[in-house]
Length: 94
Figure 1 (tube, rainbow, N blue to C red):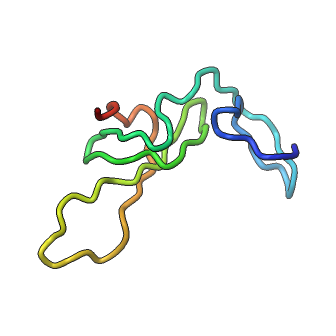
Figure 2 (spheres, rainbow, N blue to C red):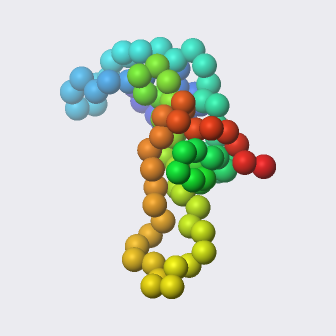
């Protein structure tokens, strides 16, 4: 396989066989429900979709959580990013 595909162009989950070689292992019949830069809510908070990828016949999403107000003790690190399955995302925030 040569070139780069976007997630929306991918129609199958690819499994690495060896360096530079791939095998189609699972087809995905539906496009992702959520898109990059969309604000979504889930159990535990809300955040912005940064990426998605096919996984086990569905989609998984990399979601950067909203920060909220600055705590009195300040912030220790960068934003928190979580990996969520499509079923774990409740919906889109307006």
